[in-house]
Image (tube, rainbow, N blue to C red; front, side, top):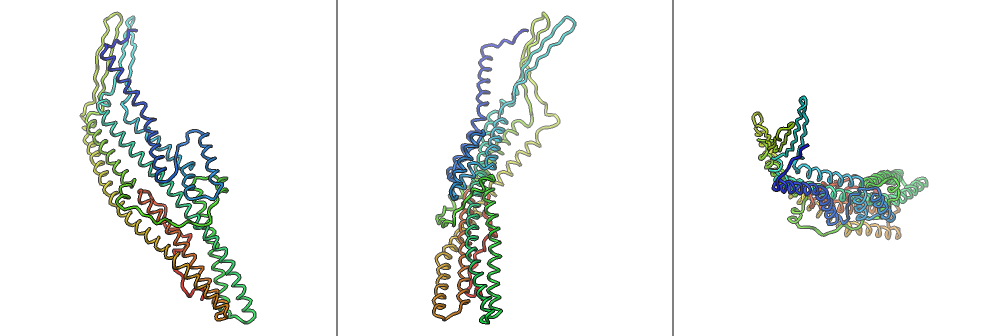
Length: 473
């Protein structure tokens, strides 16, 4: 069978084309790795923990062993984030999906593969052999635009992955705060219930002896019952908060049984970030800008290829029995008779306009969210500082002075109990204020980075209402 002979110049062109194809083929794993590396860099910078895609069972097993080591001690907030980013199946799914999206974007930017055609026809003793190869010429003409579109899409994939990974880290930290606060309140409830039940029993005995009215005894019994109901509610809330933390960390059943939490929350931080610098760091603003760039590149590609969708450049060589071979180039082009591409161009232009409008709306909403998150954070921190510096000391002073007056027989037993009840309310309000200050801080951190916040208020603690001096009466 005769072969196609190429002159030195076409041979050099073919070699260059093959080299370019090999370069494009190597871009997929490179860009995928860059996407995963960008997520790891952002996680280390903003969450203080690495994130990595485990591609084989041995690596995944190693990650689980590291998680078990972290669970051997009472879990801190930073360790909770490490566990979530280290081995959570949900985070691994995010990484794997982003890697797949990155590879698809690379594949879409490549030229289509050449088409090789072979024909063998016989007519009696005559034999005709036809060989041809064709390339999508339009793909090569628009290759720079496709590469620019790929770069914009890769940036969009990376920013979306960074946002999702940091959101998972924030969700883990938020779940830790809720779980520790709920556990702290449940532990305090145990002491409150014991004291309330002892007081109710004393009131019942004094009523039996004729030294206490039925109304006063009923009030003490009501307080004891209310404390017991609150304990049951808070125990369930603590269990729910703990399981929410287990889900946020992606723990299995054995690891959830090992989970231990500290006894109390630390004090919330007081430092703040200026609003302008925070706005520049928001991922949703950067992502909206990346979507504008991708839409612009897509519109440019549509303008270049909408009228004529396909141009095919080929080379054919035919041999027919003993006749001289026939060979030469071929060109195939779609004729824009019925579809002129105007609808696709219009759609691309409107998509670009929509992306630009979304970017403006995102930036304006981001500035508003930052102002609101900062105001909530300042107010919550002030409430916590007031509760710690004034509410708790004043409630303790009331109880101490009531104890002195009781020792001097200036007040009765249940006036002292009323002071203790006031302190109980003060402690619960302070615990709520401390939790709310942490949640407001985490909401501010989410707003600073443009993350969907997971710090909406929850019913596991009271809203922080101040106790009154008439408590228990």
